[in-house]
Structures are given as C-alpha cells and as structure tokens.
Image (cartoon, rainbow, N blue to C red):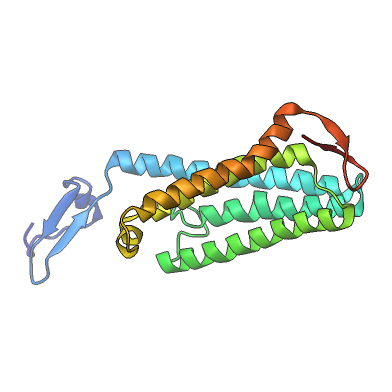
Length: 218
C-alpha cells in the first residue's frame, strides 16, 4: 500500500497478517495468527484458573490453622510451608509468563527480578516452617518426607548432571573425561544417599526413635 492511500483500522482487518506500508517511513504490520491468538487466550485462562485454585486451597488450609486443632509448632509449620510451597513458589514461577496478569506490564528483566524475589521468599518460608517443627517438636514425620524428599533429591542430581554436560563447562575443565567422572561420582553418591531412606520406606519396620516417637528404622 502506498503512502498516498488512506487507511484506518477497518481497512487493516481485510489485509493479510503481514502487510507493509511504503512511504517516507516503511511500516510493517504483523498480526498474530488466529491459532496463536486462541492458544494464548486458553493459556491465559488456565493461568487465571490456576491462581483461583491456589487461592482456594491455601485459604482453606490457612483457615484450618485458625482452629488450632494442632500444637503451636505444627500450626506454624503448616502456615509457613503452605505459604512458601503452595503460594509464593508457584506465584514466582507464573511471574515468568508474560500472560500472567501481574507480569504483563513488566519488562523481561522486571519479571525475572520479581520471580527471583518471590522464589527466595517462598524458600525462606518453607525452610522456616521445616525448622520450626524440627526445633519445637523434635521430629519430622519420616515416611512423608522420604516419599517427597527422595524424588526431589534425585531431580536435583539430574539437574546437576545436565549442568556439567553443558559445552561451556566441558570446555572449561582441563580433562575432557572429567565430565564423565563427575557424572559417575554424582550417580554413585546419589545412590548411597537414597539407599537407606528407600530401604526404610520399603521395609516399613517401626521402632521408637531418639525423641520417643515412632520412626521407621532399618
């Protein structure tokens, strides 16, 4: 379309998704494909639904803690871990998505900074919740923490191995075979660390622990 042709928003609707306006300044209009637009709509709707579900579940659990059915340390543990793991950390992950409402007006650097801040706050709450129940109660439920802790540790080892296999690290080490050795080392110490917790979980034998409460032993 030439610069002498008059056009408003109505005439743009009939043009192709990519159209050039030629004149003193060349303007290229790129319309979002319909399939991409619909996909973004559904993605944004799912994010809104996720926020609603997060709010409903965390609010219900926090209301339970107001009944004080458990001890103070357990109640504080529930509050801190729920806020950390179920509210702040998921919210921090969503901050990296430009379709998330709070992230939409921000630049990439702003979203990244807020993501890191919320994640750190979530981890701090989760760590404080675990520390409180261990400090005041003197114990942590073994079976539940084995079920969730072992897969988390295995996942962290996998991430570590993927990191040392990156080209930048492989070029940095003096010996090319060092990456292979580090991978083998990580594999073996991961097996050694998870062996006893898995054995405790699978044998299901109980005994009295050091703090006078039932615990799973070998």
